[in-house]
Amino acid sequence: MADPRHFLDLDRLETPVLRGILTSAAGFKRANAAGERLQPLKGKMLAMIFERPSTRTRVSFEVGMRQLGGEVIVLESHGTQLGRGETIGDTARVLSRYVDAIMLRTSDHEKLTELASHATVPVINGLTSRSHPCQLMADILTYEERRGPITGKSVAWAGDVNNMTYTWIQAAARFGFDLKVACPNPLEPPKPLLDWARKNGGKVEVLHELDAAVRGADCVVTDTWVSMGQTPDAHRLKKFQPFRVDARAMALAKPDAVFMHCLPAHRDDEVTGDVLDGPQSVVWDEAENRLHAQKGILDWCLQ
Ligand code: CP
Ligand code: NVA
Image (tube, rainbow, N blue to C red; front, top):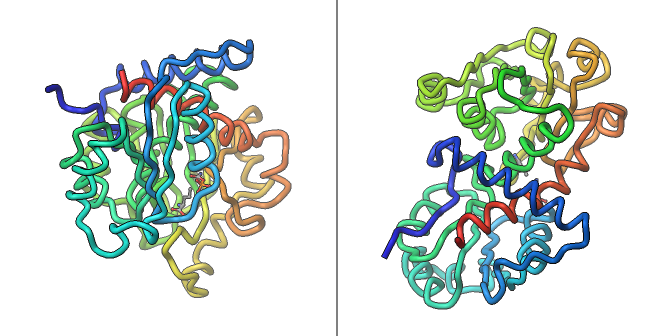
């Protein structure tokens, strides 16, 4: 039997596969807008395991799966034997006998890879503390709808170094854009990740200053300063203040630059309300595109 098509991380999938998924996502979006009911996943069942909260991921996967003709089962880990200590490997073996694909949101990236190594059906990363590839697929779809190919463009990341930063770094290599990461000293993305991205053609620079990163950028991205599972720490938060994306920072970017955020946002922490709600913000399209991008992912996984 062929290995299942897991969607775990952008660095595990080659650019043509990711591009194919995006093309298919755009097709699903067009079909939806035209009122066509494409149902390639009729009779398929997706299990979603949530060990962390979610609004967008949960709703967009459920709606997407149903629109494509499939069904979903949502498992909150505290309500399953997983929450009582049944191993992830045993859970993977059992769920693989019932469902056609499994999506996991967890803080522990190793749980995801462990699940995938024991599952005989595709496993999808619905966010770990290390990456959020479904979000990045929606983000690339959004950028390209608005501004055309992202290849060769310049993206500025501002703020924390977290799962979204790591995934943008992987995306820089896979989609061929320049990425400037602006974060407080002494934060740094992990060296192996930077080495991998650079070896694979990603032009990634790390700066400890916001202005130099956003100057001339085609796209400015940020995310919360306190990710799920972290405890807010006043001393740490103070260091992020100079990295807030405000109108002044956006004015340094190209006049047609877009502002992106995976959401949920903390208004007036990492981004001011006027930028989030302003004309350059594409955050609601990003949220919508989770639905379309994940249809592309589900269809690829279940083909
Ligand atoms: N962006 C994102 O993954 O949102 P949720 O946490 O609401 O799923
Ligand atoms: N970095 C954020 C992303 C939320 C979608 C977190 O992990 O909480």
